[in-house]
Amino acid sequence: MLRQLIRRISDIYADQRKLGLFEALDSHNPASICAQYIHGHYAEAVSLGDLCSLVNLNRTSLNQKFKAHFGCTCMEYLLNYRLKIAQELLSNTNMKICEIAQNCGFQYETYFIRQFTAKLGISPAAYQKDPLSYSAYDGKPVRKL
Image (cartoon, rainbow, N blue to C red; front, top):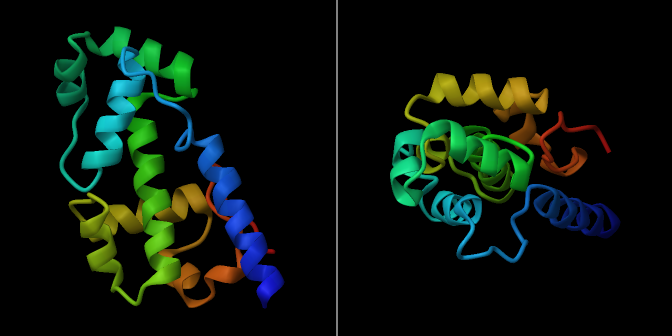
């Protein structure tokens, strides 16, 4: 059990590094500014227009800079970050799935369930029942340990 927990913590750290959550964010880079904003406001309604206004770039330019820096678009990053937070809440709390969806910035529980299942390959309810049996989310489907 301890070995599983250590492996889980290691997976979480590795996955967060892949998602760029521990990178030193450059305060002058528009992609970093947007990522910092996403980290602080993921639970709110965040639109691409909001991010564009934040850094004074058009949608195309911002997404190009973001993709060059993080390997995905702004909205993909936001979705991945929300799913990562949701996975942590499913693993470490007894919150209901609808509460987790709201706390992670999903307006509709059904949309959250659909995105979680599509991206991770398992439903939130199934994941919540036995989170230590699965790897952490790194942008690919979770795998059974």
